[in-house]
Length: 65
Image (cartoon, rainbow, N blue to C red; front, side, top):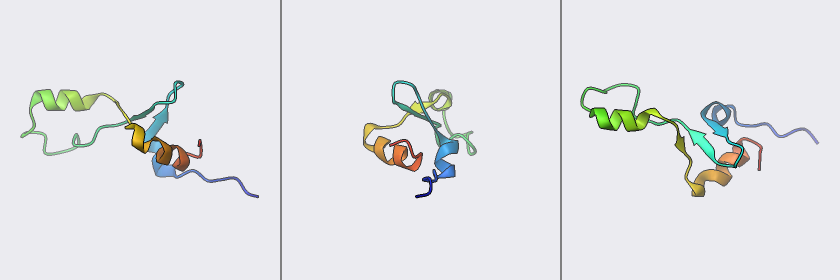
């Protein structure tokens, strides 16, 4: 039986940490930034963690489940 292939778009977007949580980037940071407040842009800057309801789907697309 051949190896499972991971979804390459998911590999580029998500990183699995040692404790099992998954990091992701923030949306709404690429353009039309003039109308967004400094506080909003600052909070979007760092990595976010994936919500627990989405973890199983992401792990299966990364072939880590």
